[in-house]
Amino acid sequence: MALSPNLADADLWGHVQYGRDAFRDGIARTTTYSFTADGHPWINHEHLSELILAGVASLGGGAALMVMKCLLGMIVIGLIVRAARQQQAGVVATCVVALLVSVTMTYHWSVRPQIFSFLLFALLIALVNWAFDGWQGKWHLPVIRQAARAGPPTTLTYDRWRMRCLWLAPLIFFVWANTHGGFVAGWCIYTLLLGCRAIEVLVRRGRGGWGVVRRLALMALVAGLATMVNPYGPGLQQWLLHSLTMPRPEIAEWHPPELLSLLTLPLLLATGLWFLSICGSRKPLDFAQLVVVSVTLWQALEHQRHVPFFVILFGFWAVPHVQSLLDRLRRDAPDVPLGSDMSPVMQRAFAGALMLALILLGARLYGRLHELQVRKDAFPVEAMQYMADRDLRGNLVVTYNWAQYAIAAFCTNEAAHDPRMRVGADGRFRTCYPTSLLDMHFDFILGKGGPQHRWRSPDSPPFDPSAILAFKDPDLVLISTRQVHATAVMREQGSDWVLLYRDELAELWGQGSRFGNPTHPQFVPEQDRLITERPQIGHVSWPALPEFSPQRGALADASPAQKKQPSQEK
Image (cartoon, rainbow, N blue to C red):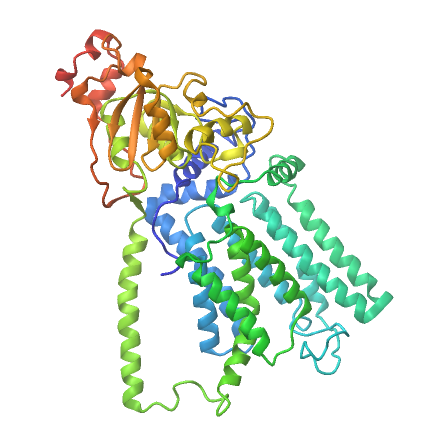
């Protein structure tokens, strides 16, 4: 249940469409569907994910995407449970950690390329754990041995064949680099982990360990080189390094977690259990694991996007310490399974209650997997339908979290049988749009915003909230009523822009010289403008594309005189 939230992600429409485009035309090298950045280079670091999403969506639509997402999540949890059982952890400790990992990842487990990143990270950690079996889970440094509960010095042993299998890691990084940009974080964690193991070898073996250290260094290097096998070669890494130097306060996932939010509660519980278990456990600590988890937790507290990396490591490495902590709390009978002292009647009652809970949860899970929801209070479903009903066409300035929905609805041949619009900017962000254009877009949407919400490039033109309304002559503007700054800017435009549609969530404005001019073929008379405060309640199934009237499509090719007769269209 925790790994199957069935709400559509804002970028899902775009990912599926770009994947379909790649199947048909190959990987696009320049920006598509945009009237502002036509011909600008596009570094698509998620092309393999988009091919997968497009293929799955073509097979079964939103339901197939939901099933795929849930299965990928179960693989991650399955790897964690398998590692726990191999470390002789009990059922209670294993289930507590697995459930906590699942709930912490709920917010991040949407149908988008990031889930492939988290899956590949879990596979990488599972491989590393398996390769270092017999080495990990022990304290190999001579200092602070008592605090680390290391006991007498242990022999640093490992299976040579398993270590050779660590050469499979470059294959994981090759797939990862073509799937999602999170491979950068994965490679940093992988290199840090191998680096800590190298320190242990040098401390324990001195010069005799240089051979192992060189192999570990070579493994990290080859894994990094494997990421260069992509359509852009080393250019992908160059672009990522440049992009990562620029802040992203406009994207919520790059903000620190809000510690007082209920969404952050699972992270706080996982963090607390990690510290409590390693302090209360009688198991030896592991130097490499402590360093890597500490660094990953630091990054998770800096950026919400890194939370799954921390919690996956927590899932793999915390279970034996949680089990030891539980054993200490049950001093009277640490080896007796929980519940074994129940009477037969209580056992049957407990089993019946468990079966009933599983049936109820299974029914609800089926409902979730059956439909991917597009909520009307989050996406402009009715505004899109109004645009289709009125056969509106032209260049569209749209808030970036709705832009890829608009691309699927109006910019593709598949949606309306002829492209009706192009957008100004969308969720692809800096991968295919110049920073100056994005600054112009956010000047309109967010205003100055302050350093917590905006970062403007020093090379961009001076702040001008209305510049995007004149840049390359847009025809329509679709914004959220919750974007107070943007709505205020539109109301200051006078007769240059006319309000065509409004509901509780969305406002649609048209260029006054076209949609407000009675002599223009695309004039929208007052009686056809829908200005309300109608609540947006409920949801529709993804992809939630508007229905296009054949009569409207025929009028698109009609003469201007014919188009001036809306009464006949009705």
